[in-house]
Length: 229
Image 1 (cartoon, rainbow, N blue to C red):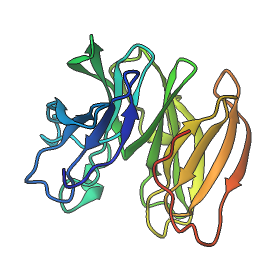
Image 2 (image 1 turned 45 degrees about the vertical axis):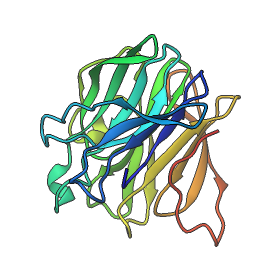
Image 3 (image 1 turned 60 degrees about the vertical axis):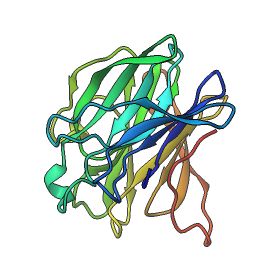
Image 4 (image 1 turned 180 degrees about the vertical axis):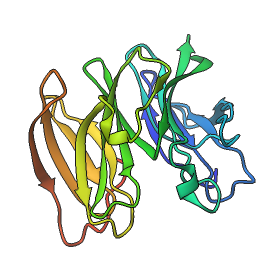
């Protein structure tokens, strides 16, 4: 496991960790399980992305059904990430009796699928590069119903109706919206990798932004990545 990324806590107190192994791609990507008694075991052998023949597992969250939602981030494969725009996906791993059964594609033709959160019957996913090469950089958040499958995202991505939030940042690094979570009152928190700002966002039932404000930033915060509540 040369590059671990996301993780989620299961009801039995075990943890599933996504391991894209981007730093040394001679090693396959995988999902591992850390049991509640601190033992590590393989959880699921990931089938290849049909466009690149390799998955890039990053953000991961367990749904109320027990299924796992997973970001398949393709931008770090190969030497030219730009050529992999539109190759990322959001997928769901069907889990029965604690065992993974199959992988279902929720959405395809994403750019940089990243952080995930589940709230109120929806899965929310940060798109870290909504508009490639934009400056200021435009990133955002999509939301999908938990039972959606085989969504082919509209192009350009910012026109897709699943988009609920846009974020602008400097563009100096090229990676925007990253970590995402919800508090118990239903407020959504989204951070930006390159600006090191955490935003607090309130959405109505239709997914429209009611308020959007800076929640946290500080001179010593130089970047923000994964996040949980």
